[in-house]
Image (tube, rainbow, N blue to C red):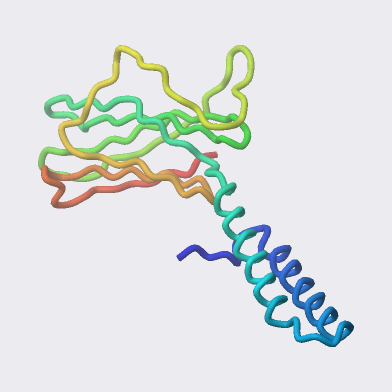
Length: 173
């Protein structure tokens, strides 16, 4: 279940709900007709509508675009991804290194902010254009990013089917 108290619009939603309940009570007392049930239903409808709209328009800040994976005998597997900050257009190149041969383990994960040589990357979602060096890893792997603080986590399976995972994290700066 989503924690709505962390939503920046939550105090505004509560204010709208409070005002609509006050308006319903005032209408009921001024007119002299029972209107609290109608007011409560209207308030509930307004609250649910605003919560749904908040969830629908709450976009992710970061987008992960896997680039390639390389498995070279006797060396750690290399996995690379492009991370796009959709709010400001910044992008990062990230690499994760995993030992799939004994001793199995996570080696490192590194991210560096890419510098634009000419022009700027606009904000919003991005799509990767196909290129010749896209290769697949021999084991399943997952990229995941925390949308609130920009911590990138990479996990690679230690065997197929995925029986165990080795993971590492890095924070975008």
